[in-house]
Length: 147
Image 1 (tube, helix red, strand yellow):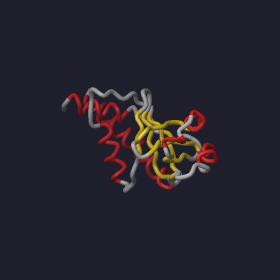
Image 2: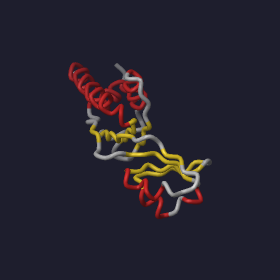
Image 3: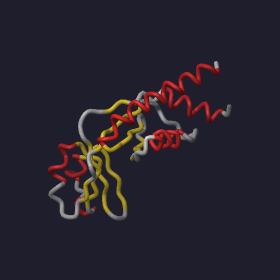
Image 4: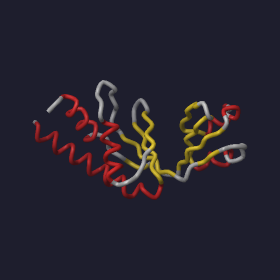
């Protein structure tokens, strides 16, 4: 087994997925409205040519909804993975996407320094979370067999 395959198994085995409380939304606002106040209500932001994408808890929606030209997604659940990603290895994100594809759901993945964050439609979270936990157990078993 390649070192990278072991890396992917280690990442899957240690990901400890958990849904964070609350509802989350992804919004796009015209960049001219991306003030410190707007960015302050977001849990994350990304500047794009078409506007600024904000990741928001439901409480931040009231302020953002007033902006002309705002686009807001359906509600999402935020699933946090507790493994520490390492960009020296590759394939972890692909493995996650494969798990989600098997359940016919999309994902928006945000890689933080300490955690990866998966935003899935709220109505899919009850399907995805157990599947991620199952994949973590299966990866741990496979790693244990290598020892």
